[in-house]
Structure formats: C-alpha cells, structure tokens
Image (cartoon, rainbow over all chains, first blue to last red; front, side):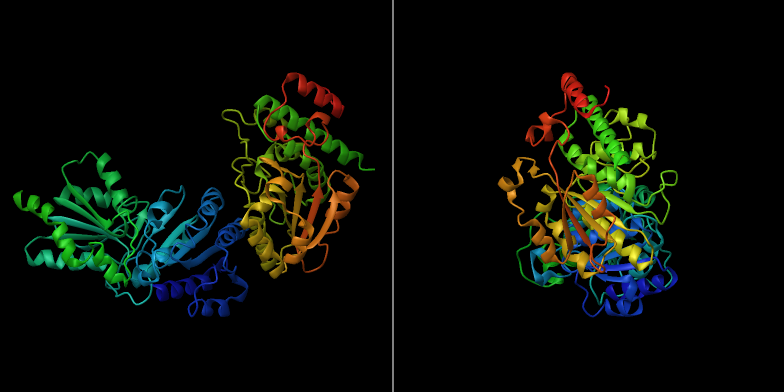
Length: 311
Length: 271
C-alpha cells in the first residue's frame, strides 16, 4: 500500500502543484523520489509531529495541499490537539497519512500498534477517515483525498499487501465497494483485513452460506446506504477491522444500525479487544492472538449463522 | 511623536476594559500588556487591507496567546475590519467574538488559538509557504511568556532558523506572570534571550510599552537577513491601569462598575 500511495501521490503532485509532502523524519527508502522530483514541495520537519501538523495547517492556510506522513500513531495521536484545532477547525487542506495501521508493525511493540486511530480520528469534526484494503484502493484513495477539499486521514497498511480487487473498482470516498454478493450474511471490513473477510466468505460459501462482503474503505463518512441495504437484504452483519472494537468501523456501523429502525438484523463487531497487546510477534501472529484468524472468526460468527439457518 | 499610535493603544485598552467588564471575562491583564504591541503592529507594521481581509499578499498575524483576544478584536475593529459594535457582544450568547481568538466569521483573524504553543508553528507554516511561492508576505506570531513552557513552541523555534525563515517574526509579550504565579516561580525561562539566540534566532529585547522602541524593532525586521526574528518585549501585566499592574488576580477577574470607571479615568477616556 505504501508503494501505491507514493506512486499516486507523485502522479497527483505532477498534476497539482499545490501538493506538498511534509514528513516527520520517517519514510527511508520511499520518500526520496518525491523529494528529488519536487525539492521545493518536500519538507522533513524532523522528529516533531506537533510542529508537523501545525506547519502543514499553516501551509494549507496559504493555499497548499499538505500531506503529512509518518508511521503508526505519530502523525495522529502525538499531535491530536494540533489536528483538532489547526487542521479540522480551520478546514485546512491537510491530508494525514499513517503507515502501519493496526498490527502492521506488530513486532515493534505496543507503541507502534495503531489500534485506536480510526476511532479518534473519526470523532473529529470535518475529518474524512479512509483505510484502503489493498494497493489498488490505496492508490485511488490517495487520488481521492488529494482532490477532496478539507482534512482527511489515510490509514495505510505497510508494504507487500496482496491485491484483492480486480483492476476495475469504482472508488468514491464514502461509498463502500461490494466485493462479493450474497443474501445470507454480510461482512463489512475496512483496511487490509478485507483479505480475511474474503477468505471467510469462501469458507462460508463452501458450507452453502451466501456471504456479502463490503469494503468500507471510508469509515467516515460512513456509507449508511450500503449498511442499511445489507441490513434489509441479509440476515446478519459482521464488521471486521484491525482496530479496537470501540469507536472504529464496528462502532460506526453499530451506532447507525441502532438508530436505523431496523432492529431485526443480527450484528457482531469483530476487532481487537480494548486491551494492549503485550504479546510479541508479527501482524499475523498478533491477529491470531486476538481472535482474528480465519479459524477464530468462523467460530465467532457461528451463533449468527445458527440464526441465519433457522430463518 | 507616536501620538496616533498612543491613541490607538489607548483605545485598545479602553475597549478591552469595557469588553471584559461587560462580559465578566478573564485575561484583562494579558490584553493590557500586549496593547502597545498590537497598536504598533496594526497601526504601523502589518501590511493588511481591512477592506480586503483575504488579500493574498497580506502579512499574516497569529495571536498565539489566544486568551488575550479582546485586545486583537479591539485592534481589528479600530482598523475597520468589522464594526466596532461587534465588540459589545464579546463573549455573549450568539456573538461572533469568542473568549479565545476565533477566525470563524471574524474578518482579519487568521487563525484560531487558545490552546497554547500552537501559534508559532502555524506561523512557521505560513512563512515557509510564502517563501516557497516567493510571496512578500511575512508571518508574525505574538506569544505569551507562559506558552514558552510548551514543547511545541520550541519545536517551531528549532525549525524556523534551520529553514531560514527571515519572514517570520516572533514577538514575546514577556509580562512575567503566568496562570498560577510569576514566570520565575512557575517555570523559569531565563536566560530567555540567550535561549532564542542559541536556537538560531536574531533576538532583540525591547521595552514593550515604549512605542518608539516597538516601532523601531518591528520595522527593522528581519533583524538579520536569513534568520527569523524574535522580539522579546518586556511588558507589565495590566499595564495602564495602576491597580491592575503586576497583579496575578487580573489574569482572572474583570473590573466591576466602579473599577471600570476608575480604570477608564486613568486612561483619560470617558466611560
């Protein structure tokens, strides 16, 4: 996803000379092409994320489109008040980009686990929150936020994620992509864990359960039409995210469903418990430790399937 | 000499006293300490067009000590950015003028602040963008001494000289009193000028109530070509009203009716 982001950013920057890249002294091996191609539009502020966010806002108030870039929680939580006051309140054209969403930097430890960022960014007024699922979504999301007027948060995985989509996706901010169709149960996921949603769908299809899969790449604004349609057309909804179950995609869908007037749909949030993961290991290992392996997910959704079968 | 600026400063002070009195709001002392600085900035230094507040080539002024907004609102009204009647609504229900400086719907306010340590970094971004576009705009940030406790202020202090932002001017309203006591007692900043110099700024210390010194300093920026300028203005909290001067209490309370009458009389302004 990181490579796709930089490719798309370079392309966008060729078209739009307002685009500047502001980094917090991270991005070794990936920021150099931009810095060399656009030396007057690249800025390394040093290890100073508060300054990075405020400077980006100041540049945006002068007419720039400023992309801030760092890893894990550094471009979001470290400078949260700067994002709230400078970026969001001023509707500044700042695009916050974090590499390492969820457990992408699993082995680096708790400080590098970005597991509450969606909830926190989602709570901020004006902020658009996007977590693409694969390189193709990442590329198109980058173009979309560059063209969007106002604050955006782009949560990327890392590098080397598999391509999930065919090449022909219709990517629009705030509009879910239907990856699989089915009428029994809907999996809604955001970010790279879409891959697991598709695997779950395959496993359920083998048991004769027709599974709809939505890639909810934009967590805010939420595609409530897609959620409501799924609630009416399928018997159960499961959200799946590499993020705390509090306040992210699952929280957003739960809030909407609870007020939607469609109380009949069965619903479950799958994500990380609100607990720090002290286990040491890779992304895959930590996801399994937290109940998000394919096998664990199939067990977790079994009660919903009982209901589906009964109907 | 400076009679016009002195009159502007006096009117800012009188407005601040009336506004905070009517609103029963805090920070009158902070507004009085910055009044002369604002008078020179808005009366002489800033290249701005009150009738065209979004003029692209204007200087940017960021009030980083956003709690002292009554002074800025008063200066903007005096310069004609908005009708002076707006000042009567300060801090009231449905007013445009919030108790920390707010840009929404207020012509002339470049940035909303109120959380400390944000203004200088914003001004850094503005100054850098102007440099990159070869625009003549300068960015001024007015800081409190208290917010020199904030790490983010020093992130910007490191950044600006490294990037040669000689179109950036930090003015520190060094009134020596912060929220819970004197700066010396709470978290000593001294030697303050040496700190900014060590970070790479061109520094000048002035009497922040001497209009001639303020004007000389602010009209000779950049103090050194290639470097950002830091003007440390030694001021008195509550300046201009004898019973408010150098008193922590006036960081919080507003004048009552009688105190307002006495204060305005000291300024030589009719109630």
